[in-house]
Image 1 (cartoon, rainbow, N blue to C red):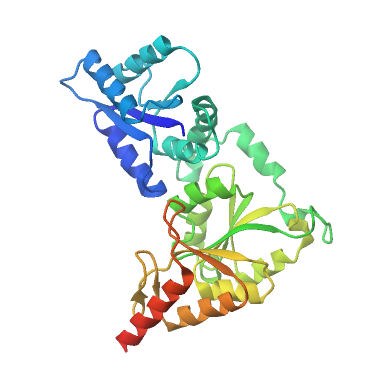
Image 2 (image 1 turned 90 degrees about the vertical axis):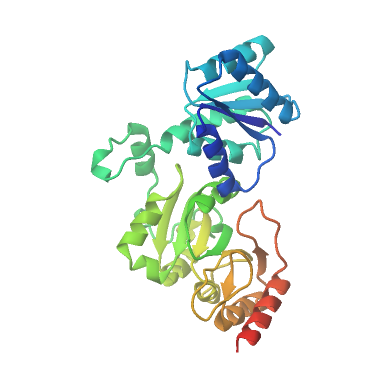
Length: 332
C-alpha cells in the first residue's frame, strides 16, 4: 500500500487526517506532520523522517503538502531529491477533497506517481462556488455536460448496450447522497450516474437541488420518483448506463423491486432513529414495518450487506433482524 504523509504549517494536516477518517474510517499508512512556530527546518525534517519510519518505511510514499515553497514543502522536496526516483512524490495544495481522492485511489493504484496524477484534476474540480451565478464554468466541463445527452434526446425504442440498465450498487440510507457515499462508495463503484429514488425528495426542490450539487466530479446525480425508476429500468435507452441507486427507506426499495427493478444485493447503510423505532446498530433503527419490509425483500432473494461505510465489518443480516424483533418485543 502507498503510504501517505500529510504536511502543513500548524495543525491543519492533523485536522485533514481526522476529517478523512470520518469519511473513510480508520486508515493504515496515513500520518500527519505539523510545523509549529518554535521549530526550525531541521526539526521539521526530523519529524518527517520519523513519520516515514512510522509508516514502516514503505517503498511508495505520497506527500500531500499545504504550500509550495514553504518549509514543509522545501524539506520534503529535499528528501525526495536525495532519494531520487519516482517512488516518493509530493503534491501541494492539501485539501480534504485531495485526501479523499488519494485514499480512494490507493485502493486500486500501486504507485505514488499514479495517485498524484489522478488527484490533481479531481481536487481542482472540487472547487465550486455558490450561488451558481458567481461561478465561471470551464469550457471542458461544459462540453462534457452537453455531450451527456439525456435519454429523452435518444429516439424511443433505441437499444443501447444490452438494453438493461446496469445497477452496480444499491443502498438504503436515510441521508441519501452525502460525503461518505459521494466519495468512498462512488470511488469503488465507479458509476456513470447516481440515482436517488424517492417520491418525497422528488417533490422537494430544495433537497433535490442539494443532492444534485453533492455529486462528486464527473458523476451526474438525478432524483426520480419510484415509478420513474421502474420505467427507467425497462427503458432500453439506458442499456449503456452504470448506475448507483440510493433509497431513503426499505419501503421505497420494496416498491421498486416489486415494480421490476432488477436489484440483487443491497447495502443497508443508515436508517435514522425516530419515534417508535428501536436502535439496532450504531447506524440503523427500525420499527415493525421496517422489519416486515426487509424480511419481504429477503424472501425475494435479495442479499443484504449491512454496514455504514466500506471500511466497517459487515453485520449478519439475520442477527440484525433478530435483534430488532427482540427490542421491539421488549418495547411493548
